[in-house]
Image (cartoon, rainbow, N blue to C red):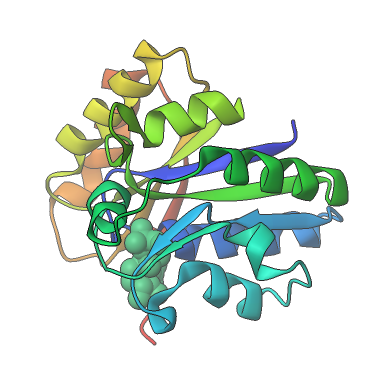
Length: 202
Ligand SMILES: Nc1ncnc2c1ncn2[C@@H]1O[C@H](COP(=O)(O)OP(=O)(O)O)[C@@H](O)[C@H]1O
Ligand SMILES: [Mg+2]
């Protein structure tokens, strides 16, 4: 397995947080882990690629970790249109190939959820398929997550994409739904919840 695509039920659910967590965990187990954020949108201070590169002390050049960077904090398609650009997917595939050669495993962080548009008629789910990677879904721990997670699972299955598991993130111990969500999601989707992460202040 050359890598894992870390997707999510939405933006802000913890994909970057989980990508860092998994990279550290795989490193502890002795793997040389690379990371990739194929497309980032918005100012440099919010760029997940720069953040992960710094936090994980990764030496790969930023043009490989993040081959496509768009200025505006939007989904890739509208961000590219605002700059009058079309996203060149070839840049992503060649960067992934390079990183794949350098590392035992490459963790690829997605952009928002699976239906986020990249080019006209091409969204995150198509990118996952073209990269031929299995996925991990990051989902919120609390209320609303059953719907979002089941929709994401069905979309991935429809495309024949392997789902390794679901990670529920940001348990705060305050919501009733946090107690039953994992079990419900496993029962209804048949996908294992492979991790539950607490919200850690600061
Ligand atoms: N378990 C957690 N504990 C504390 N902070 C978290 C946790 N998960 C995510 N965060 C924070 O919440 C924000 C959104 O998470 P992030 O990983 O950036 O989401 P995504 O990559 O899906 O957009 C970030 O500031 C991140 O550091
Ligand atoms: Mg992120």
